[in-house]
Structures are given as C-alpha cells and as structure tokens.
Image 1 (cartoon, rainbow, N blue to C red):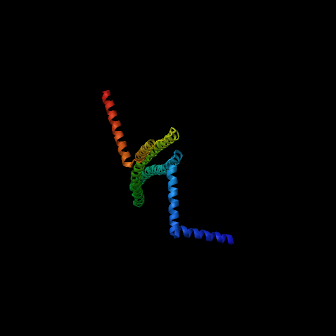
Image 2 (image 1 turned 90 degrees about the horizontal axis):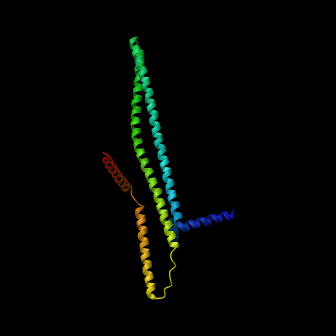
Image 3 (image 1 turned 90 degrees about the vertical axis):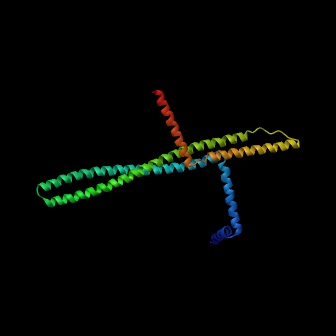
Length: 244
C-alpha cells in the first residue's frame, strides 16, 4: 500500500516537472528534437526508407480498397433499382389491364382502386429513376477517383524502388571509398578540406534534387499524363496516316 502510494506520488511529481515547469518544457523539447533526429537518420537508410514507404503504400492500398468497396456498392444498388423499376413497370401494365376491364364492366369503384394503385406505382418509378440518376453520377465520379488513386499507388511504389535503390547505392559507395593517403604538408591538408567541401556540396545538391523530384504535385502529374496521352495519340495518327 505504501509503495503504491509512493509510486503515484512519484508519477505526479514527474508530470508536474514535465508539464508545469520551464525545465520540463525544455526536457520535452529536447526529447522531441532527439526523436525527430532519430527519425530523419532512420529515413535516410535503405531499411528505414523502405519501412516508411511500405507504411504509406499500405495506407493508400487500404484507402483504395475502401473506395472500391463503395463503388461496388453503388453499382449493386443501381442494378437493384433497375430490377425494381422493371418489376414496377410490369405491375403498371397489369394495373392498366385491370382498369380497362373494370371500365368495360362499368365498375367505376374498381377502376378507381386500380387507378390509385397505378398512381402509387408511377410515383415509385419516378423516385427510383431520380435515385438511379444520382447514383450513376456518383459512380462516375467514384470511378474517376479510383483510377487516380490506382495511378498514385503505382507511382508511390515506383518512387519507393527508386528511393531505396538510390540510398542503397549511396551506402555501398560510401562504405567502399578508397582509403585516403597520409598527408604531411599543410598545403595537402588544406586541399583535402577543399575536396571534402566540394564533396559535401555535391551530396547536398544530389539530395536536394532527389527530394525535389520525389515531390511532384497532383497538378503536375495530370499535366504529364495529358502530355503523354497527346504524344501517344499523335504517334498513332502518324502510323495510321503512313498506312494509307
């Protein structure tokens, strides 16, 4: 009992220090900075990058499957409504026959009953037709979104392969660097610093290029796709013209 109470008191003291004091704020910032630094270092390795990409790909695949399930449900609902309309139209035809039969027998009351039922059927048909129109519009939008999601998923997988390969080759190149010679003169040491500076600058430039090339926007993707489609169409027309 005493030990439990002491533990609770200790926890309270720690929480007060972390969230109620300036020192606690500094500790939390330091811990956050350390965690962020570890994440950055991990992401710059082939294994870490692969893990992060796999997580992102899994999430996109999950989103795609969820969107596809909604699309399939839309199509199923449209099919069900169309079957329901066909059934209602058959019922409408039968009611018309019944109405005509009542009129021929001068059965006005019977005709009124069937006319009321026929009006109900007509109302149902109109409601379902409106629902089908709305569902078809939504299904068209959903289908377009699915195609975009599928393309983005493929692009992300390709980006993963490129990024991981880049990090792997850089890691191997770094580990297999030639053993530097022994420099004794001051001039040689200064030159070595210059070479190191050049090397770091090139590595930073290469890293910036990779980061830039990996961050294409949706608008750029669409533009690239449009240009590619136009180029393919132009080649097709040229080939067809050559056959004439």
